[in-house]
Structure formats: C-alpha cells, structure tokens
Image 1 (cartoon, one colour):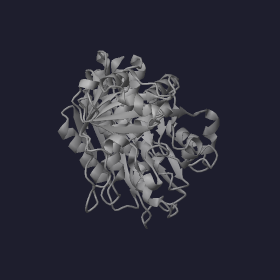
Image 2 (cartoon, rainbow, N blue to C red; image 1 turned 45 degrees about the vertical axis):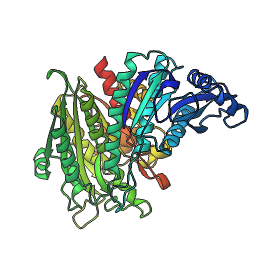
Image 3 (cartoon, helix red, strand yellow; image 1 turned 45 degrees about the horizontal axis):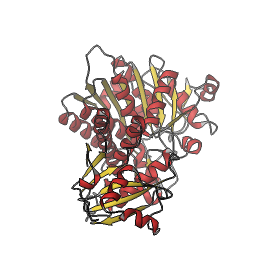
Image 4 (cartoon, one colour; image 1 turned 180 degrees about the vertical axis):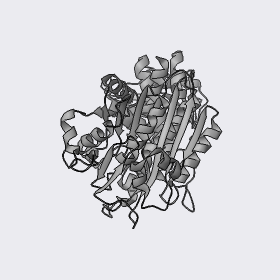
Length: 494
C-alpha cells in the first residue's frame, strides 16, 4: 500500500472516495462543511434525518453526490468534539478503513488530520498507516485458493491548508515500519515445518541481498561450539533441525559510531522439550520466534528509511523438542560467558539461547543492547495483551523506549529489576538455575538475562503477550517493530 500527502479542496478531488468527519451532534468538520456547501447541503439534510449521528466510529458511505468530483464520500463519526482519546481515535481509523476495504475503491483521500495540531496530526497519520496496512495484510498464502489481495492500494492524506513538511517524512517512515511489521507477521505466521532456523537464516541473507548496507553472517552449531555456547546448544539437542546464530550488520553511519544491537529470540517451535507443554494451543508456539522476526522487520524498515545509524541484529535460532538426546531437567551447562546454569525446566529455553547471544553481542562493542523475546507466560498474566514488559539496567534507555512506544502506540510498561529478586535464581550445584519459581516469573527471567549484560546498557522487552493474537483473530501483530523503529529514528535524529 502506498501513502502520500497533498493539499486540496475536497469537492474538487477526483478520487474514488473522499473521507470526512462528522462530530457527535451533527457538527461537520471543515472539510465536510466544504463538501456540504458544494452539494447544496445534502450532508446536512442526511444528518437532520438521522442517517449520521456522528457517534464515534460510525460510518456512512454515499455515492455520486451532486457538485462533488469524487465517486464516493465516506462520512466518519468522530464522537464529541475535543474528547477523542487514543483508544477512540484508533477505533475510528479501524472503522474507517474497514468501510473503505468494503468498497471497490483502489484509492481514497482522507481529511482527518487537518484540524489537529502538528503533534496530533503526526500521531494520527502514523496510526492510519499502520491500520490501513494491517487491514490489507493477508495471512492465507498457504491456502490452495488464497483470498484476493486488498483492492485499496493508495491512501492520500489530504489537507485544506498546506501541511507541515515533517508530516511527509513521518508518513514515509511509518510506511517503512508497516512493511517491516508485515515481514514480521508473515514470518511469525509460518508453521514450524517451513520456518526453521535455516529458513530464518535464508531470510536474513535475502535481506542483505536486497539492501547493500546490510551484511549477514550465519554461524552453525560447530561455530557455536567453538565459541563455548553451551546454553544455546543445550536447547537444540532434541531437534534434527540445526541451530543457527544469525547476525545482520546495518552500516548507516561512520564506522566509529558504536552500534545499537537488537537481539531477537528465534525459537522456531517450542514444545517445551522434556518439560513438555500441554497440547492445547501448542500450535501457537510457532510464534516463539517473533523476537527474531521483529529484528528482521526492524532492520528492513531502517534500511528502507536509510537511517544514519549503525545497528546490529543478533538472532539465536533453534527448535526446542523432546527426544532421546534432548536436555533434561537437572542438566548443568556452561554458557559462553563461563557461568554455569542448572536447567530445572527445559521450557525456560528462551533465556538459554538469549544469554549466549547477549554475551556474543559484546563483540560488537555496542552502545546499547536491546533484546526482545516471547519469554514468559507470567508477563501475559501481569500485562495482558496490551503492553510489552520492559526491563532495563539504565533508566534513560527505559524512558526512551517507553517514549517511542507512546509515539507509535506500541506501548511497553517498565517492571522492576531489583537485586531483591536475584536470590530466587540461586542453585546448589551451579552458578544459577534457569527458573526462579512461579512468583514474579517475568522478573526473575529478566534477572537471569541481566547476569549476562553487565558490560553495556541493556533493555529487555518481553513480548509474550503482544507478539500475536489468539483465537478467531489468530495471527502475528508485528510488534514491537513500530517501537524499535521509532526508538532508532529518535536516536538518529538526536
């Protein structure tokens, strides 16, 4: 889907559909007033007759109005003037694009941000890009008869007055992030028999081929064994699919600039290993590589933007399956850092692949390291499916990530990383155990990772509750690609 910005009078736009707002009580937006005047108050008459109340997220599609060049006019209810919150604005956009996708229109012009201030307009357009792209996304590519692709291909954000120049750049960057989200969703939705560690490695190599500023390296299990990655290799022991350690180096700035390293958990299927998960909904464990998918999506987005920043993606990828060679509860392994780990639960495998990847990340002499992982069910219990869990050893880094999440509505919530929790990981037989009990499960998981990140600024995003939808709407969300992309844009801008 393509997006553009232009200035123009709504009644003179030769568009398949012009979209304007109506506030509750029948008050027309400025663009709607211009249309109403051109069509001799047809809109006012319809409102007076009760066809459109202006109730938030309501829609009314009209055809071939007299005096208006557009083929269609879509009226969208904006609710009470001045009372739109983030949630209601997103619901309005969702309803708007659902109505547009229900028409044969291949393009549409939206007058929805002309009355907003610059900051609100930028936020609104960013959300419009994400929602329009999300509704156009298709997840049925493996069906024998996939559905038709969305007819709507181009969205113009129209303004009565000259829009701020910054909005154009913001829309272009949001579109790149939306394409990164689409990549992350497509990879997440693939089943484990297709999306293996080798498949992820191939996708990373393809990304480097498409973007000259990206260099991809893939290490195999022998390479990892030489590096001493005993924790990561313990996870892959039960699988016939070979593990891969994938790195992508995006060089967008001077070589002297220290990079931001993104580490994404890439468990392409997680059965729990010997600590086998219950069968119900186990199919959703194909999404246990959404951290890796989001690293690839973010790297694609910043490469398209041409961001002047050095960024490295590190993806430890493996399958976690039970077999006669699989790791067992009670096994003790030595991580790349030299620290030993007692594996009390083989289903707490994400932290095992991440700890070696976080140690490996230090070789890039990073300014900042951010890992993202579908790590704990405890985070879903704590925050539901709204916010990602955020932990950090640096408050400024945490604040910057929270701000980027607020800008994109890809929100996170900071949880404590206090030393008080560390004793829960004590082991009688090794330097630490890989679980800390039921209480504070997402916190003790982060505490485990923190033991491998003492040499740099670090943040951990637990996306177990936000990386995919379950139930009827099952599918990847593409989060936290928007948050990460915006964080990197903000860094490059500063």
